Image 1 (spheres, rainbow, N blue to C red):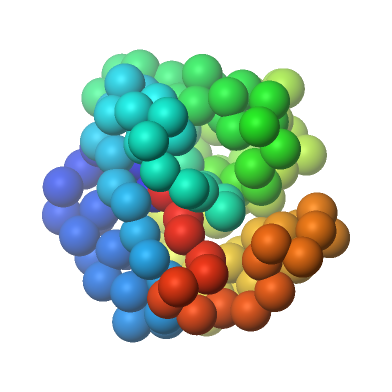
Image 2 (cartoon, helix red, strand yellow):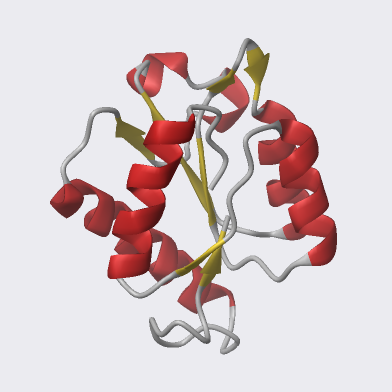
Length: 128
């Protein structure tokens, strides 16, 4: 998960862990790129605006690697760059049920990509 606001990051991370996910968090583009270099990531959730910096470079890297991702942003779909308008967008603030629905859609995209991800367990789904 790429999120620059510490309190929001902790809240969403707790929700994701409660749902059974292994979560890597990054507060910046640079930190996200390091995670992508060093960790296995099955899918990602990106804030659009990271302290004035766009998360688009992370989106481009995820696309290049074939890793599904969605945006979580207070700007809604209008805040997502033209290149990423076909990606899911979770509008902040959101309910846990909406987060679950988005994650299930990302899991479905993972399953379509191959057998490496077949079920949600803490050992198989790793998200950034």
